[in-house]
Length: 353
Image (spheres, helix red, strand yellow):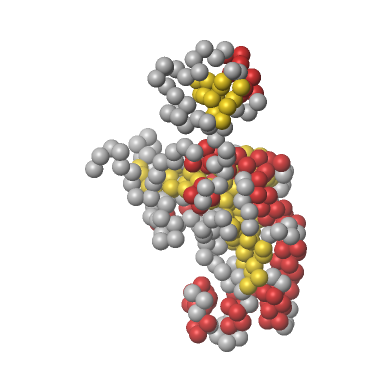
């Protein structure tokens, strides 16, 4: 093995993808900031107990090592949400509620999955700690959608779910076995009384009509009213679907969860929902921008202007103020083509190549 090889699931981001990554992160965080979410930065690694104790993160997902200073087991974070909860409930426990926080940074998984072969990903998101009302839920979903739109994402679909649905219905029998059957969408293994839950999945409003028909005794009325209110708050150009039994990745969510998709990228590009951090209610979302980078989003126009030897610094500064990326010629052999420039300065003016 040579030093140039990377472990499975890790990769370098080269130009222009690395620039696209920075633009996507900035667009989402700037949108969150406009809604009052203040940025915090959590460490890449913590003591293992801190990462597994907040939201039930499994130690199986963590890349662990022994800290040579303390002798304690540490781990590289596989998710930032729990870290934000820790900050909110400890370092910012005195802050009036709700507290709005945003974040962005890399996370590392111990093992990849078939759906996500990457072991290192960029996670960006926002968390509202101290409240999980319908109004708060509407705000968080709105921040997620507007952030993605600001990043250039189009054709967005929001898939809503009810993670604690079975806990409300409280059917008799082995709940774990029933949850597994619903996770697998195995209608044959689900009691006939609950089989309509699988068939209810689909686009709103039809999916909601099927859920209302299923909920003849009104056990789910408040929950369905809340989901309907969230859906009604979304922009008209966003497609909304409902999958009431979807639980994959929503194990720590409470009364609602949502996944984000786009026709421009493959797979899920974000998820969020309501949860509890300690004794506090919270709602948040995380966007996973790697599929967006892979789809070519946010790469932008390459406006690189080649400045021949002798160009005055004042002229170069004025061109940068106009929005140009200037690349100075440093040797006689250097060229605009070699520096991947789109324009060259001729007679004081940018000329396209």
